[in-house]
Length: 230
Image (cartoon, rainbow, N blue to C red; front, side, top):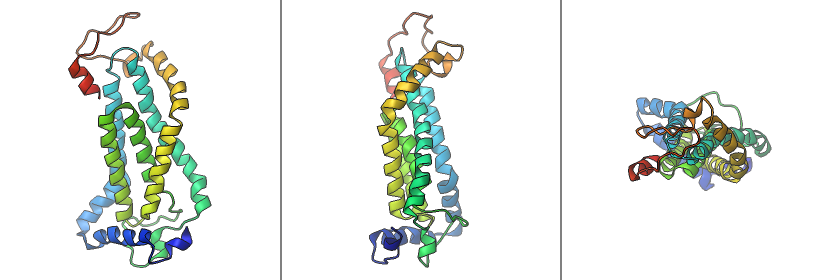
């Protein structure tokens, strides 16, 4: 992998230079904005999307709410699992950062000395996005858009090759989807148990509709409720 990165005719390097060249030609204030957004801002936005999705799905009716909340919880755990798996993967591939191998890269974040493949930021955001997508198509698509923007920012900032980002997307997606059945089998009983406890509002609540008494079903959701929960 490192040898390929040295080849100037490599399309991976060419695309890196094209995208990173936008940073070189941009005004300084825009680079500072992109640095903040790419390093922390989009991850914070992803957390907010997942949190909002949790709040919405917890207001679904019946047994669907705890199951959906388990899915949102898995989105965060999937990101953590994917990041742990990336540690040995990075060491195995042993790919230096692009600015260490190529002259003329405009680096917005100095001091990064770890390996480049795969991108932690791309891995984390796509894992969360896929987890959210399994719960809600609407918020999942928004989360995927944020993950794609994060990948673009990492290349723009000069700290990753495009293939580092694609590798991160693949790793995050694989972990979130392939491990979901086992994870949800473990998490769903826990969220259902919480639903029957004093903390039940965290996983099952129905604002604007009468709360169900213990042992009684929630009222059937209206068309508006289903649309908001999507």
